[in-house]
Length: 181
Length: 301
Image (cartoon, rainbow over all chains, first blue to last red; front, side, top):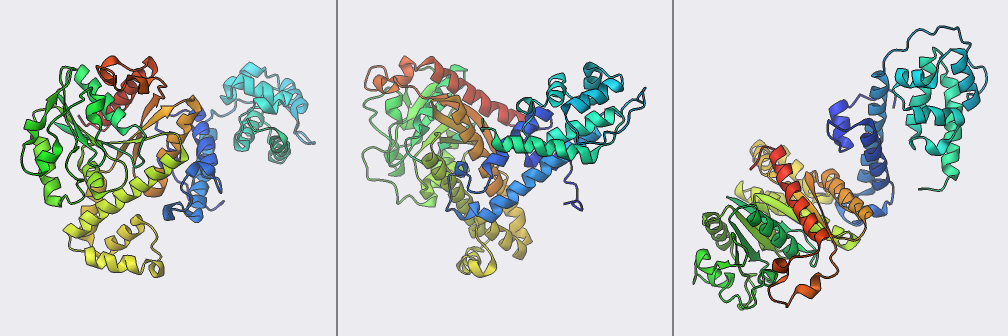
């Protein structure tokens, strides 16, 4: 996957069936819909025996949808404004990242949530949910949560790829247990 | 003048209702409209129009005994006229392609702004050809797996029929038939696979077929909606036709199920003249707007 050629913004939107005016939220909804539609044995396709609906073709479509969404998310992240220099030197977290340690990091850096929201373009409600680990109130795609965490730490001037993985993992474990809604 | 076709595969999805509703609204907006009941095996558009004894019908045209103009009847809506379907002569399976071309040639000459064809169910050649020849292609489905499966079959048959027509025109039909016979060995499973293969053998065909394919674009209407979340099924169908058949689909909108509509048939005047429920009326308005907007976005009248 790492050596994959980028699809380009226009092609990604075409695959996700959204127009140029679609917001990140529209794109997320389209992705969730298509991911369900082209899931293996999806009942929503309604034509199981037609040659066109070959499982291999369905799998290829699903892979394309995943790739297009991941690429659009990466592009969105890249488009975020560069973080301002941090006033206070913050040490990197040396333990697994969790809500309370994120808040501690932020406060040590002298950031309010509002400031962080404008730095990262992440909605205030999501930032609060991240810090309080209210997984229910976060976007359902782990890739988005990962993106938020990356942006959060980057705005604080902290790198922490390894620590993000732990958080995302817990989020996904929670999703596995949570009732689907 | 624009020719519209309303089709979609399964019977009972409301093709006649949608054709009627769109025609009525176009007339209300000031256009001169002719509704043509082209459901050769199951004509009933006259009943929607409140005409109980329509008299002469399309059968007379195919027998060469009347012109289309002579068959046109007024309805009680100013600007909305109709041509009743074939009620009295045996079915029209035997229509030749010369008949069909003549039919379309004469439709184009009608003195109207919009001619709406109310097509029958199924995938008979008559139905497919009429649909393919229309300028505005409207497909009606209901939120049921059976209707959607038949819709996919309708789309597949449209694609096959269109490819066949181009192959015939380019004198490649026999060659294509051979390829199709041996398709398993050649890794060909779908109509598009066959088209791609034939395109590899003839650049001329490829160019011609590409032009023809560009005309195949559907407006999708979801009828009989009882719950809003059923709209997802139209979105699924739209996506699947795009992804599996590579045919673009513009979702035009949905029409609510009207539990009292049945009651208005058999009453005078007919159902469209008495008016349906507000929800259904609103749905038909938004479907018409959806179709006109999608066309305007592509710079079409």
